[in-house]
Image (cartoon, rainbow, N blue to C red; front, side, top):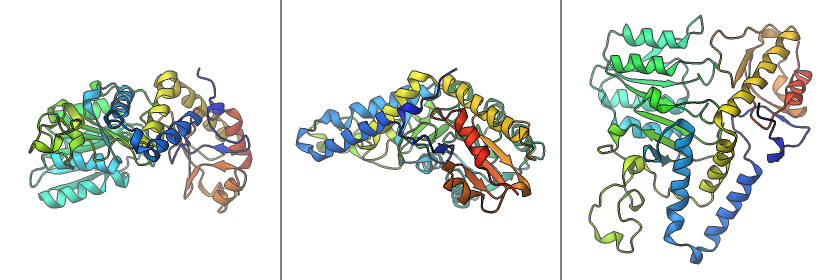
Length: 380
C-alpha cells in the first residue's frame, strides 16, 4: 500500500486536513512550479512561442492519463461549469425530450441543463434519491421507464453530496440503448478512483483540478468523444485553438482550421503561466504513485473512518453502495450544534452539513489524522 506522503505537503502535524472533496492543498513541488511560472510573466522578454504550447501539451497528456484517454481527446478549460457549457452547446436536445439529472446534483452540473431545457423546449427530469441507496438502478430505471425520449443523461461516478457510488458503465449502456448522450462530472473523483473512459465512452467528461488532482483552482480538463472532434462547437474563438496560431503571420489567414482533436474546445489564454505548472507538477506526482495506489490508500483511510465511528458507538450506517474514497456519516442528533467551530479550533477540517459529516482524506493523511478527528468530535 502507498505510504503517507505528508512530507510532500506543507501541512503542520497538529492539523488534520480531511477535506479534499472541498479543496485539497497543493504539494510543495507544485507550489515551487507555480512560483516559477509567475516569474515567466515577470520577464516577458524571455518568453518564446513555446511558452504558449509546451506546458499546454504536457498538461493535456497528463490529464488524459488520469482517465485512460489520448491527449487528442482532452481540452483545457476554466472550470467544470465551462466544460458543461461546451457539452450543452453541442448535444442535440429536441423539443419535448428530457434531460435526466440525479436529485441534488452539484450546481456546476445542474444549472446549465435547466438553461438548455428552457431554450430547447425540453424538460429536466429528476431521479429521486433511492431509499436503498442504489443510484445505478434508479437512474437506469428512470431511463427505461421515461414517458419522454431521453436526450441527455447527466451522470457521475459518485454523488457529490451523498457519497454513494454509481456504476457508470451500466448507466452508459442504458443511455446508449435509449439514444441519449452521456455527460459526466468527474471533479469529485478523477485522480482518486481508477477510471477508463474507453469503457464508459461518455460524450463529454469534465474534471476540475482543485480537489483530488491536488491542483490549482480555476483549471479543468474536458474529455470529448471523437464524434465531436471534427464538428464540435467551441465557446471561444482565438488563435491558440487554430492551426498556425504559433506563426508570426497568424493574423493573415481569415479563418484557419481548428487544431486536431478536442483542442478546438480549449479556452482562451489556456497557457496560464502560473496555473498550468501547478497542475503539471501535481499530476506528475499522482502518475508516479499511480491512481490505483492512491485509491488503495484512500480506501484504507476511509475504512478506518467507519471503523472508528462504529467502535465509538455512533449511530451511523454504512451505505450499501459506498464510494471508497469519501465517507459521509449521518451522526444524527449526537452531533453537537457547535461541532464545526470546535473541530476547527482543534485543527480538524471536514465538511459538515446538518447532521452529516463528509470525511475525504488524501495521500497526505495518516491514521493519526483519523484518530484526531474522532477524539475531537464534539458529541451530545
